[in-house]
Structure formats: C-alpha cells, structure tokens
Image (cartoon, rainbow, N blue to C red):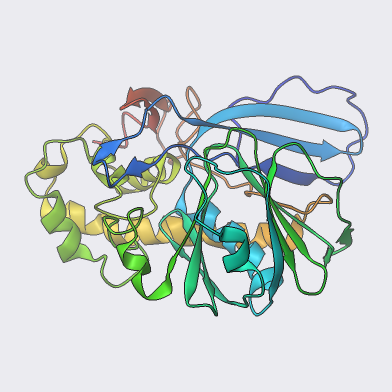
Length: 346
C-alpha cells in the first residue's frame, strides 16, 4: 500500500529495479455475536518496505483490512492449496484471538482442499471432509509460502520463526506458514453446509460485487440513517468487506462529503454509489492481481500491493481533480482517519 510519509532514505545511490514487499497487518472487526465493536484502539499499523539491493525505505500508515487485499492473498493461496492434500498441520499454540477448534490437527490432516473463496475479510477453505477452514489475518497475521517456485524465485523452507503458530504441510512439499506476532488473527473449522451460519459470518451484509448489492438495496438500507455516510458504508452489516481506504476513495469519486448524514442523501446520489464501489474495488483487485504476477517476494510472503489513491494518505496535498486548487484534508471519524476534498465533496 502507499505510505503516508516516506522516511529518510539511507545508503542512497544507484537505484536498481524495485521489488516491493508490503507486510500485511489487519485490524479489529465487528463481533456479531456480541453486537458490539471490538476496541477501537486495535487499529492495524502496516509497514511499507521497498528493497533496492541494500537501499531500504520504510514508513507506516494507519491501515484496515479491505476486500481487495484479502482477495489478493486468497488468489496467492489458490495455486498452492486448491486441489492439494494437507499432509499434516502443525498447530504450535492453543489459540490466537480465540482458541483453535477441537482436534484441529486431526481434522485437517489428510483432507484435500476443494476450493478457496472469500467472504468479507475472511478466507474460506473448503475441504473434502465437508468442513471449511476459516482464516482471518488479524492485526499482524502474515502468510508465507515455501517449497514452491513463483516466477523467478524458488522459496526454500525457512528456519521456523518464533511466531509461526500454524503450518500447513501440503502434498508436493509446499509449506504454508501463518505467522502472527500479536495473535489477533483467527482460525476456525465449521461444517461447509452451515458456513453461512457461522457467528463471524451470519450477520455480514451482501458482497459489493454480487447481485444482491444493488441500487434498490442500498437506498433501502441507508434510508432514515442519521450516521455519517462514511460510517454507514463501513458497517459490515450493510455491505461486506469495505474498509477505511476504499470508502474514502468511493466518496471522493461520488463527490459526497464523508460527514453527510446517510439518510439525507438523495436516492439518486445513493444509487450512484453502487457502480462507483464496484469500480473502485475492481480496479484494486486488478492491481492486486498484477502485484502477484510482477512483484513476487524472494521470501515467499503473500503481501499487499501498491495502489495509487486519490485521497487516502494525501493530507495537505493538492486535489487531483482538474481545476481544483484545494488540498486534501484529514479528519477523524469513529477513531479512523478520513481524507476528502473540501471543494469536490459536498
């Protein structure tokens, strides 16, 4: 992802071809069972690291997990998991955010992965045992692949690290490691036929790229709401997978001020949000797919991708709209940074 500020460049000199590595840090999510938001201070910090043969640039930005990034990680797992048997699983501690499911090692060993898909910010792995493995990265979750050739790199198995909590040994020698320093990630097993009833999934709204998310639906869900439009679009019960970055981008394209009350926006303007949301997400997913092809990392980590934003992280920079001379402003809404143009968004 794009950093808000680039740090001081050390060892400046000749700049060979860049290989980007973005470490994925996800944040807290709504607990549907409790009907409340987990502590707002659990906001993910992601680190943007660019490598230039000894040149390192590092920076941080406040980040939340979003649909395109989870989709990108899922896409990176498909070629090494789908259709393959999990020979064995190593579970090196009893829990992450919550305890692991009972007999997790035994239930995974020998199963064949039938398919991978995404629901909101969760990766779902359907097994031939008629169970589904749920994976959530949490604040600091990282997935690394070894024993597999990707592009120009063959990723040898690394020495086990301190926070390698779950390791999947796949048929053919591929190893998939879930490393989570802060242990805010999650894994669970559920009946595949009942996955829509799982407590983390059952109250999530429709997928924004699916047919159930349409103009009539969004107009109906936003009608009469007094909350700001940005907060409404971040509500996972209204639409799945949207996060802080892409909602800022959507509202900029729609020309809607993030503090406008959702219920006071005209039906016509609400209707325009649906295709804009789809366009913004689709563009980001394409960028993520490109990153998987072009920026494979030498250590095998599945990471997030670099993407150009029009508002997010651009505080005090000029608006990119032709003819606009205003600078992007930043405010805080529900503990999260909001970036917008005071002239283009009303």
